[in-house]
Length: 101
Image 1 (tube, helix red, strand yellow):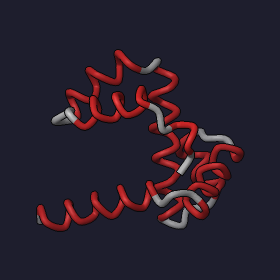
Image 2 (image 1 turned 90 degrees about the vertical axis):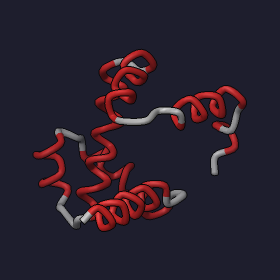
Image 3 (image 1 turned 180 degrees about the horizontal axis):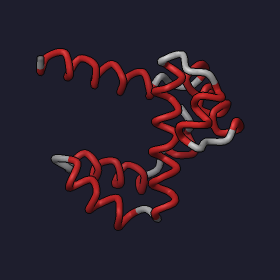
């Protein structure tokens, strides 16, 4: 884990995020905290990660998301050599969807 991001301020931000109850609250909070471009960039990286896990090609991902090959490559590196954060979330979402059926 990157020690540079482990600060009191980041802790406070994450604690604030953890209080959000639903997507509507997320929209309200993140519209205040992020610029539109920051939020769209975050969501684009998440979509790229999902598509990489679905074994889509870089070309398919670029066409669907508008992400550059550099962004796709960076996300792919995180998936393969990062802290498994994406996979943790994907697994939890998959489990939640399975239990709702």
